[in-house]
Image 1 (tube, rainbow, N blue to C red):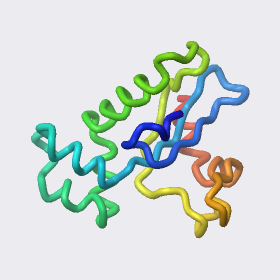
Image 2 (cartoon, one colour; image 1 turned 45 degrees about the vertical axis):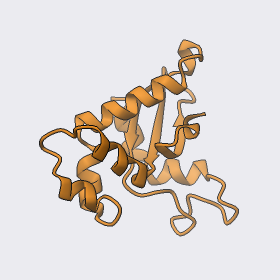
Image 3 (cartoon, helix red, strand yellow; image 1 turned 90 degrees about the vertical axis):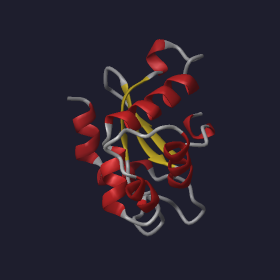
Length: 131
């Protein structure tokens, strides 16, 4: 459901045994660049930084932590889940700068998500979402 949004390339939702759901979101970087170019970006996100998103991991990490970018994704997630019940809503999420991959073990060779590996690789980030 979340990946139906063109700005979300990959998403994994966690919450079993917890009070609410959280998600790890991998943005579609090229589309994020277009969004940031077409709407007036915050003054502290430079055009050079936007241009570097596709090839500069540090630039991507910095932009994905920016409150305005987080708000764009919050609105997208809320829009996607608007018809879902309260307990199906994503309460907190984290934007990842690198996609899940076969090389990291997070995807199978048929490109299916390996939830247990993703959870292990991002354990601290997931725990932080519950703090």
